[in-house]
Image 1 (cartoon, rainbow, N blue to C red):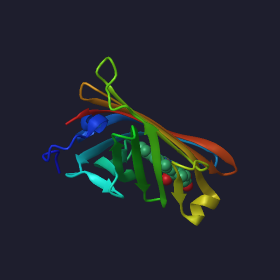
Image 2 (cartoon, rainbow, N blue to C red; image 1 turned 45 degrees about the vertical axis):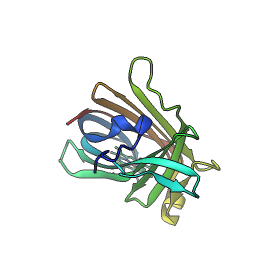
Image 3 (cartoon, rainbow, N blue to C red; image 1 turned 90 degrees about the horizontal axis):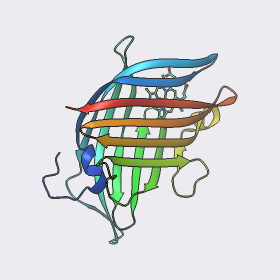
Image 4 (cartoon, rainbow, N blue to C red; image 1 turned 60 degrees about the vertical axis):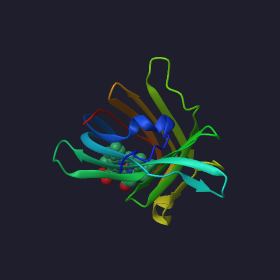
Length: 189
Ligand code: HEM
């Protein structure tokens, strides 16, 4: 898919394309402590070819993405994620829906005025919380009871065909709250 229908993707426009990065750092929970996983990945963002209209009132521009992450140590996929980024121009809101095959999904949100920073970079920042009325986390009964995601924060900065992100997922697991973090720097293909 492309942005061929003259959709105004606003702050999501710089995402569209194929990105590769091999500087990934994952910090993940283990029963006896912490697992550090260097990784590389490809993320493909493609513009949804028409606006989405909700209740004949809200108009969203949307970008679909697929993220495939491989461990450097064995080249095996250890994280697979898909979802959408959405922009509500008149509400000044960006939203990020995320699904992972652990039976965890969420809808994170944040404010955005549609403008780039003064240095030309675009910053996208969203969060979700188990207690939020607006930006919520959905998980299976097993995950809720054994590895509950309680909070999620994600920041992307795109500048000069370099996309950097950092995300923090708080996971209640093995009897305590674990700060599960992921960050990487990707280049446009
Ligand atoms: C680049 C992104 C990510 C990578 C590379 C990654 C990788 C990992 C790894 C290695 C584990 C340890 C368990 C295992 O070895 O399978 C883990 C656990 C977990 N991850 Fe992620 N993760 C990422 C993003 C996320 C996101 C976005 C969420 C949810 C919003 C999430 C939720 C969880 C949960 C709930 C667990 C605990 C399950 C368990 O350890 O048994 N992760 N992740």
